[in-house]
Length: 199
Ligand SMILES: Cc1cc2nc3c(=O)[nH]c(=O)nc-3n(C[C@H](O)[C@H](O)[C@H](O)COP(=O)(O)O)c2cc1C
Image (tube, rainbow, N blue to C red; front, side, top):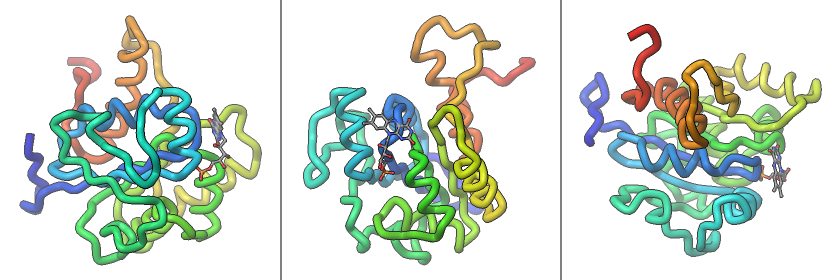
């Protein structure tokens, strides 16, 4: 499905996977996302945890996004490729979702560190006042985590913790995952995959 932006542009979304638990959210997001084009990158620890949890094949040098979505229009970029479109402020991407987002990557973003494509792209989204969504995963949070989340929020980012709810009576893991994925889609301004509350 082509999703046409209100300004008539085609919506381009970037997704980054880091080394927190919950690659399943990224996997599901890429199955259902209705953006016209998706750019994917991941940190080395992101790939490591993804492989451990989701048993996906591939390496940082050669990762085939078709493992997520067979009808793939996902373009994969290496985490050190600063020639990727999202490394520059003049890119056409409307939003970046870091899912799952480790406390390490959160801390780097809060500190303005941009030494890989994920945090550089986050830095770029904030400076260009575009959408940055961090699907954070840790428990419990330390004050440092909370302060970092506060700073990123004040800089314009959206902290969207991987916190599934149970009021929609999930029957299986996919239902629970879809709750969080739906929140990400809504935050991006993309169509929901779940019925609207109260309808
Ligand atoms: C199996 C596994 C699960 C992990 N889960 C988390 C997590 O949920 N949250 C987190 O902040 N770090 C988690 N970590 C630790 C991060 O992977 C580690 O801090 C790493 O430096 C993050 O690097 P990145 O931000 O460059 O991806 C986990 C590590 C492993 C091996």
